[in-house]
Image (cartoon, rainbow, N blue to C red):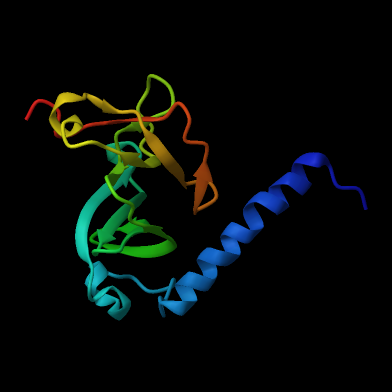
Amino acid sequence: MKYNLLTIIYIFLFVPIFGQNSKLISELSIDTSRLYSHFNEINSFDNYSLYASVYIGEFERIQFGATIIDNEKNYIVIFQTLKQPNFKIIDLLVIEKENNCYLQSYNCSCSEDIDHEIIGLARITKDEFTTQEFHENIIKAWRLNKKLKKITPIDSSGIKCYNDGFGV
């Protein structure tokens, strides 16, 4: 049986990611077939607070979203399908917090157009919180991939995220 180069690259790049996220979901005792109404229904998230919630897609046809929670050590991105007012968890990502780095969601782009599937970890200095319109020092980035129903890492070069605090 012949495999083309793209199939081999796909297997090496994405299969370990899927396995890791599935393992994490299992370790946290998350039931991916259950409908949840709030992240705090999951005991593993007891010491986390809401950081952000985003919807992905056109407003009339929103089927996906993400809830981002955090504590002093980590961000957790909960990728979900929406069954209003509830959701099903389809993937998770744990991001360890770094000094002067903040998770940016919803208003990121890799071109001129905003791509609501992109989230980025931005290194931000104190003065940039109000003086920079865009955060451009994105050190890590991921796609909330609706087609694959997975969170996948992407190249962070060229990505910028709108600064919600600009001008405040």
